[in-house]
Every structure is written in C-alpha cells, then in structure tokens.
Image (cartoon, rainbow, N blue to C red; front, top):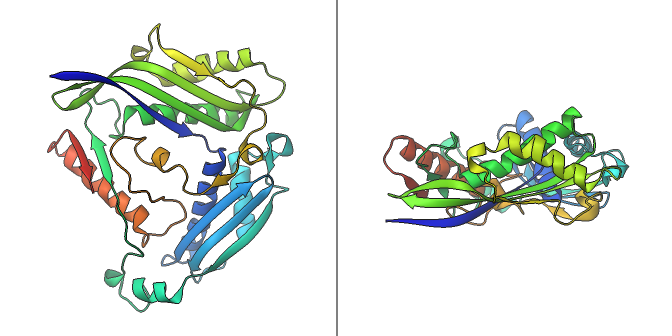
Length: 308
C-alpha cells in the first residue's frame, strides 16, 4: 500500500530577528564556556529597533565583555549599515543577566562531582530520524528542511561574497515536497512549492530579485529532478522587502524551534536550544535523543524512528 502527501518545512536566514537573538544568546554562552568550561548559562535575548536586551541567569567564573560580544555578533551577521535597518555600531545593549539562583545551583551542580550533576529542569525531548528510500540527505534530516536551509545558506553566501550586491541580511525560505510512502519509507517525488522572501536594497527591481533568486539560488541548490514545469514559485510574494531585521519585526531567542530541529517532522517538546549549557536538558536531552535515533537508523534497525 502506498499513499501520497504534501509536506512543508521552512528556514530563516541569519539576519532574521529571531535568529539574531539565537546567535547572540549562543555567543554569550560560548564566551563563558571558553573561559569556564563548567559555566552554567541561561541567556535569553530580545531585539527591536536599535535595541538588544539580555535576560537570564549565569553561574560562571569568567569575565566577558557582553557589549563587545553582542556587537561583534551583529556585525558578523551583516548589519553594519543603518540603511539595513540595524547597525552594530549604533545598537543599544541592555545587559540584565543576573546570578544563577542559589537553590538551583545547589540542586544541579554545586559541590557535586561531574557524574552527579543533575538536569536543571524537567522536560520533554525528542530525537527523530527518517531513512529515505533514495538517501537524499546524508545528514538523515528531512529533505524539506534541508532544502529550505540550503536556499538560505546559498542566498547569504552570495550576499557576503558580493555577487548579489542588492542582498541584505534578513531572509526566509520554505519548501513543499510531494511524498509517497512505500513500505514505511518516505520517497520525495518533486517540489510542489518553493517560497523565498529576502531583504534587499532600494535600488533593485522585484523582477531582478526574482530572476536572480531563481537562476543563482534555487537552480543551484535544488536537484533538477525535483523541479517540474508545474512547480509553484512564490519569490518575493509580498513585493518590496527593503525594511527588514529588527526594524521591521521584534526578535526573541527560542522562537524558531521547529526550524532548529526537524522542520515539523516527528515531534517537539517545546524547549529551545540557544543560550543554554548542557545542564539544560531542552538542549542536551534533544541532542542525546537525536544521537540515539541516528545511531539506530545507521545500524539499519529501522526506517523511521522517534525517540522520546
């Protein structure tokens, strides 16, 4: 018995407001861990027009320059000009991080051996893996998600290399594939719909954007066998996208949890990853569940697996 269905996954670019926050939260975490491998960090970030706010709790012996880390992260993403809607040089950083609660520290790690360190909270974590009949993704990740990620990655590679001179840091991509289930395996048949919305300069036309997205991004990323004459393309469907990033939309850490995991396949317990050390099982538990799922599938013990 076989059945066909459509499935959609999305991805957002590094300049998307929520992704800016994820990257800042992880940059703060990484800075602490680089100086204190046993640091305990829970860093949340919010961004809006010219404003970055950090909240959360830290238990670390490291001394870090929060302001510099935040601005360097924004600069690396590409927001180095006020015309882009966000500028690392002019951003106002409000550091509201506080010391970790003593009760939590005592319960989780304080005066404990490494083997005795506990989870910082309860939670539900999932690991997912799917063996595709034709092994489309070496990573063992859903093809809808991987193609969405690769579209964004290609766009930003062309932006940073200067090939797409009109390109700006904010972007989104979405891919819908037609699948057929045969003997428990999902076989992708073709791309039903591809959506891309990218931030751009004022001086470029929508026609030029759509042409270059098709010729330089989509056709270089997606295997021609998945593209058909009736594949639907929504390129810049809302028209102009000059104002983007935090000037257009507020951002928060942990608001793209499906993008960060399996693109809607499998299941999700609701916890985000960014800005959290290993005692936060939202992150470490999900990583462990993914490792279990991938190991079982690589051992050919299953075609599809969901680990809770």
